[in-house]
Amino acid sequence: DGLKLAKEIAKIHYENKDVHLARDAMETAFRKYPSYVTPEDVNLMLEVLMHQQEYTKCIEILINHAGVQLLNKHVGEEEFHSRSLEEQLSQATECYVPADLLIDLHTKLTVSLIHVKAFEISAPLVEQLMTESVEEFGDLYLDIAEAYMDVDFHEAALQLLRPLINSDHYNVAAVWLQYGESLAAVDQMEEAAEAYNKVVRLAPQHAEARLTLSSILQSLGRLDEALLILNQESDFEPLDSQLLFQRCKILLDQNLVDEFINAAKLLFRRHFIHIRNRDEAEAMISNKKLSNKYEAIRELRRSKNESLEDNGPAYTGPDVSIEDQWELFTSVCNILHEKKRFEELERMTFTALGSKEFMKDKERAREVEFMCLLACIYNESSYFAYNIMRELVIKNPENVRCWNLLNLIISKADDFRHNRFLLRLTHKHPDLVALGLLNGHNCLVAGTYKYSLAEYTGAFKQDPSNPLIPLMLGLTFTHMACQKFSGKKHSLVVQACAFLNTYVEMRGECQESMYNLGRAMHQLNLLPQAIHYYKQALTCQPVESLEGGPMLDLSREIAFNLALIYQNSGSPDLARMYMYKYIQI
Image (cartoon, rainbow, N blue to C red; front, side, top):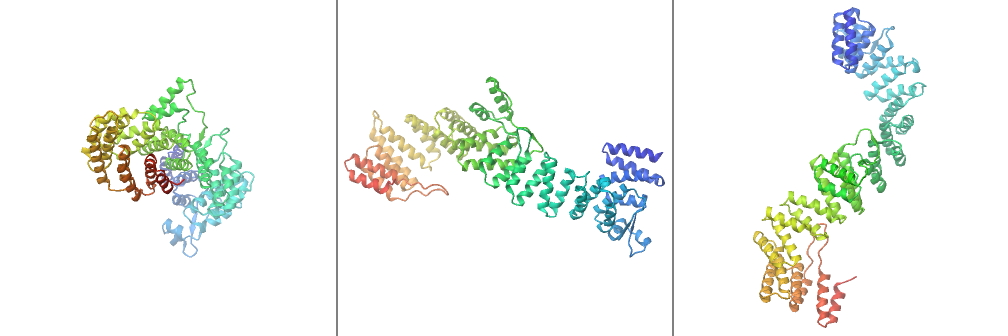
């Protein structure tokens, strides 16, 4: 009764997947009632132990309760059995099995011996099992084949799998899958491809088999077939993310750019937000929190009586890792940039702003925002670029690169929103040289020269080593001197020349500085001085470019200005000479 009760308790625990409790119950029963243990009890105990991968313990149970013996023909039986079980397993030359041992226990013994890598004594047991009918005992064939596969002995597994795939009852996708896996493991790739093809035909929705088959076909150089295997009809079936990702990789390797980009967009739609129009794009930039982005887009769609959800494809299977998706996303963006498809690049980066996967990581979120900024600059979307850049400047007011980028965007913008923004920012950061310079530029362009002088002078006091500031001061005084109703023109010209000479001293006599000095003299209508500085500029070497950048050669501009002066002064031959010598079309 005690054994029966323990067995019932063990069964309940085992069915509830409480394997440790089931084992404790069975071990207690085996210890207290060893003489009452039946083959059915042994079978249950073995199932529990095999679930825990305790294969040596399984063999011990079979020796103690099922009459199994390990033998060594070179050593006496008593001496051999006095050794530990591990030593017996490593030294045994034979495994004795009672003739009346249940076939299930026979199979579990064989599986256990294979897992402890006692291949020599397990081989005869396998041969004995293979004399049984495949149709009737195919599940036992499969158990042993799986054991061989677990210990990477795939050649032995193939001997058991071949009869199974040729049978009527076991000619199924699961068996063909294991057959293909073993063939691939022993490098029989052509046969493995055929096996996996069979799996795909029998189970078209088996994504893992299609992935493996695609990889095998790639290794065989059959790329077109590999792509065909990964093809999915989104209108008729949910898309498997892993298959789609693998397809993207093959298309990228084959340099099939358009197909690659389309497949990548399809993959990203699983978590990217679909932007329908310019208003939604602006909502993506204006709202910083991801939840606010979604809410703003829903409000826009409600106001236009549009459907709130996008009619995208359905997806199935495990998602691709974020690292792999990020690498794929950057590859797409790089290709779109190389192909100068800037409008697509802008849309791609904007949709990424709505990705719950990318934006929950702060570092990636910053990277996506910066990629949006670059896409807007390349696509000349100054309105969006300014909105993004404004936030970057507020967060990084000391960063010179941010100010350079803002200046680049402002120079291409069609509006003047930046004026008030810069003035507001001045109250928070009155000591920023870059901010003072930009405010000075705005005032200079607007024609309010006194305000620009005040800004440039403040910047010059803070950064007296920057040659750009005296240049701007000199140009401001030049503009003031050229005004129709300005007084004290002589004083203004003198001050302009003083600051311009300070600029030349700081910058050095080079093509750029001489050209700027010549332009100022030209604007003041001091033509002899302008000609002098222009000619001096032509004798200077062009300014050395930064690594990888274009060389700044101003000789064409200088020659054109000289030609204008000579032509207006009645010397067309000299003008023509400079045009022919320096300006070539």
